[in-house]
Image 1: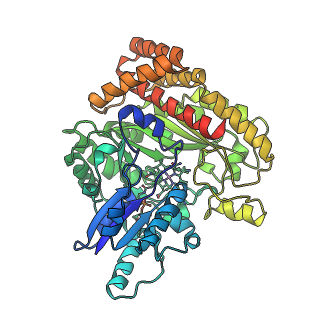
Image 2: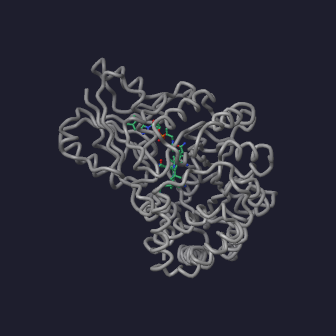
Image 3: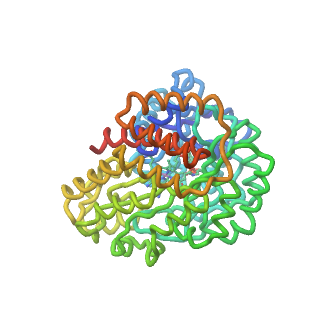
Length: 492
Ligand code: B12
């Protein structure tokens, strides 16, 4: 059987990094880890091809070759996914779909023949058995969370790694916390399930042996969900793994209580992590109570961020406005917090209710869900009716984005973080692509861009005070260009 795995196209979003990728000559930020994991679960006698529409075109010859199309997507890829489904159907292909979009809204896709939902480790074997016996069902759902110690090494050979800015690896699934706007605990449970350190090393070795020396994203819902296991098992293994390796800088997602554990931060830095995405959400304590983000309460969030920076980990932060409890001052407070924290990558969104979250259920009961979830939380839209009124929310939101991504404020944050950040242990080797990116940045940001004054000022400042962080300064300047373009496109 010939199977074609298809990953639909991402639109230009905050997280697509599309405008930044052009500086480094890459096509896409991350490869489709879900699909290459699914590929590894398929029987060896199947012939497999993968087309990621973010780096390649889907040719008619690909569709003519295939017997079955396997499609994976997030909500943000919906438009492209629908187009792919139509094309496959027109060629008479059977379609199997899975991944977050289909798991969250299975009944929106009437043309899909088989919905193999939830985690493929649980549901794919049953589908394959039924397929072999000639009786495949329409929907497969998991009864329990699978043990990911049985998850296979993704089939990296299916993709051309050189076309991606980062590769990805997953250590755990699940999160101990239960924020109202997030459905991770429903999807993956409250007890983080982890792979063994040996599994992680085998995955890293596969990536390293393929020649990869760039960044690697640990795509965990909350990397520090099981601190003990991390400190006793995974991090010592990663520290050892790194000893004879070059490059391969790690980044991940974690909760703010990382700041409470200096030993953990030090071990992460030593293992080669240089940044961490943290859901800070809001400096307003009532809004934190409302969304059940209790672990962000009763602490000095600003100092926490600084502690993490001082340990050598750059914080990227998620922020939300539009909670029922948000006071009128919230917009100004968010701007002040972001500026003072030195968080350069600040993902600020208006509160949205993705289907499957407790927030969605509460607001649907109150008839306050107004639209479909766009799948992109930084697109200047929301699908809820906010208590403060939509116009006020949109105005306040625009004011935040306009200010924090204006060249002056943005570069101010870069200088702030560079001033505080302990020099990370690991760094990616400087190659010709970095050199090219440096020259392109010089031209686009330093000559043509309206930020040119800020750009050269930053470079001189960094050379004088933190010369070793120059590559980071240029990288952040390039990100700023992307964020500004996205704001102009969707928000301002
Ligand atoms: C890493 C990550 C990101 C990364 C990278 C995403 C990428 N391009 O790969 C970044 C940071 C960019 C990102 C951004 C966003 N993300 Co995100 N992200 C994740 C995260 C934490 C891990 C995804 C991952 O790689 N998992 C590892 C692989 C192995 O799992 P997988 O892809 O799910 O595949 C498994 C199954 O789904 C299934 N499967 C997958 N595909 C297929 C196909 C077939 C045919 C079959 C049978 C099975 C199958 O089998 C696989 C093995 O079990 C998930 C949460 C999670 N744990 O899934 C959220 C998640 C995917 N993100 C989500 C969202 C909402 C977002 C954002 C809007 C921001 C936000 N609030 O987090 C943006 C949107 C992106 C954009 N605007 O461009 C939602 C998606 C909801 C939805 N219905 O689509 C998730 C599920 C989190 C959540 N709280 O609900 N994200």
